[in-house]
Length: 148
Figure 1 (tube, rainbow, N blue to C red):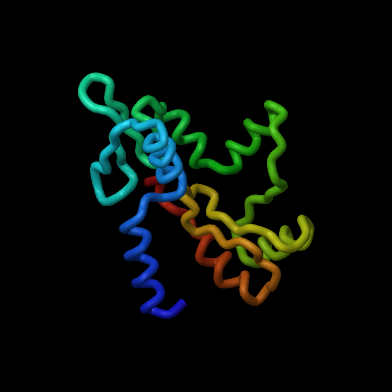
Figure 2: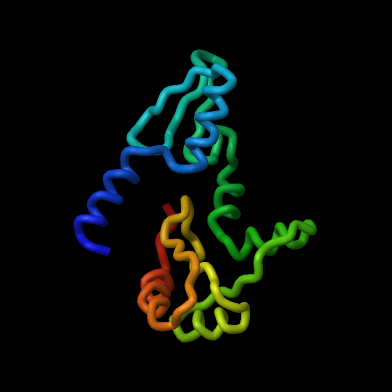
């Protein structure tokens, strides 16, 4: 991606609500619930006074730290959902581009590459069908990331 494209994409990402937040705000607007954006990110307040509620992306002011931790761990989330009978896509945790390519061939192309601990769609690459194009992307995403 060109430096200009990266800069433009960054400005757009900084200006607009994410898809989850936007959907919740749209639903509030449809229901005539007053709302205000509290920062440049996805922190939004609904209502006023003692009845107000806040969301940050898709988490509410009542989301527990445990729930947030589980949701950030894609492998754990999938195993918990699977244990409850919820269908989940096949997936494999890998630590190298070679392992990712082998897993992609086992699963069947095209595949989606995601960081294990990411959120908000950051670091997701959809439609991987070519080993050459995947190598750099997997290398970038295979690095451990700090929790945010």
